[in-house]
Length: 352
Image (cartoon, rainbow, N blue to C red; front, side, top):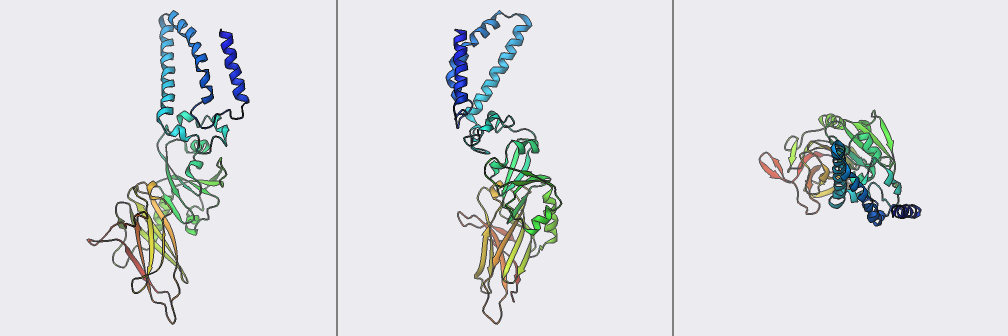
């Protein structure tokens, strides 16, 4: 009987190994080995008989070993039944059906996905889905599985966690001159994703300090108050910089996160004419607020083209700014000298 059952197990192993879908698709653990459980269970019988014959220290050592193995089995199966991360493992950082070699990556075993080690590490990703960057190689570089994510578009924004953090920026992201200058002297390593995404550069730097220095050198005055100004419970506007080329305006705003936002947010930039009407606007926020953490620096670049006024002269315009929920249109409240407002008037400029 022993030889027959071992032969069945061995034959099953060979058949499974020769099958094109040997990894069994989306599953938890070796799904197509489930049929072999009765055969494997049969071989527990002589193990239990041998345990019953043991005496003294050997019996205690065998009992301890059995308890450890049972505990290990319960832990693995409990995670497969109750944790979402082991099932997410099938698709992240790449679909298991397209990259079955991931099965043999012991730096990222399925049953251990979602169990974190070490202190949390901040990682901000631009131009690539976050799940594609967090593979076993990046986990090894960061030295932990406990990763606090951020997402941003480096072409028009930046999010910088407090202290030294990691930044993964896709090669396809064209950095604004200001961001390029902040990263100019920072060494970077090149990374690649498993799926068909562009390579990226991985930085390790205290970018928040550089952003804070730039914010201190930018403008901090408005028409009716002085920055910083708090917008609801989400963020504070620390300073801004207005750049102009003919009718094109670029507004760089420096924000400090108060807390993660439970609702989506956008920044609106309104160019107001003398009568208060909106002559031009730009609404965007390319560092999602639901991933902010307290103390994060957020830099947003907004570009507005003001339509040329009729000759002989262009009237002055006023720049207004605010935060709002794009799903409801509700603006975040601002407290200005004891009065509640829903926008800030930064400054007036002459477009002549």
